[in-house]
Image 1 (cartoon, one colour):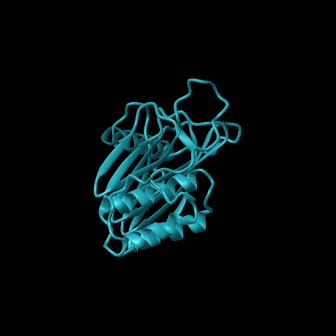
Image 2 (cartoon, rainbow, N blue to C red):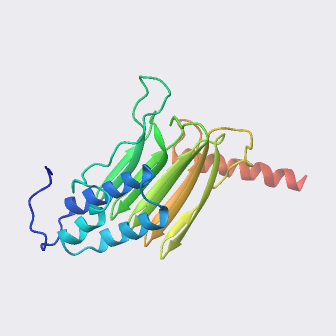
Image 3 (cartoon, helix red, strand yellow):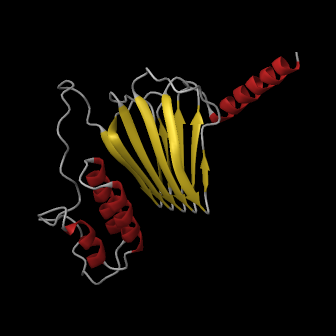
Length: 223
């Protein structure tokens, strides 16, 4: 039996109800139950849904019981009995949150900011082997991503009436290095900012370091 509020299907959805549906879609996508194009289309419809029934229809064919607060759990990783559960989604709706320190992204992590924002700090994150794909979507919101300088990172995506700031400074791809982080960013009237910082370095300290490096490069060119 669903533990969601008993709201008539024809009523406009509350922010909480919309958040629950988007979180369920994100979990299903991260678990491989939805292809990227279908996931994007359903999230867009969830944002625009005007009734509870319209929201319910977005997950009805994916959750046989009709309950969509949580998605089926992915197969357990054979990496040790005490491994913490890997994070599959970060969602901020009219709010803000932050992931930093030691955390465990899933091989496919989804981040959605709707009129809110969050920050994903990968400097101490425990990435799994191979490629970790991070899909970021923001509407009237902002997403910040921090990566260490020695991580193989690829950034792609698009911005519509918004901004997508790529890495300010990053070494060439480390072909032999594993793991690898691949960021897919989509901003609609919002912004996604990906920065390189040293461990423990603040945004201000990173800007100062970059200015010093640029001065050294200019001085070298003049010699």
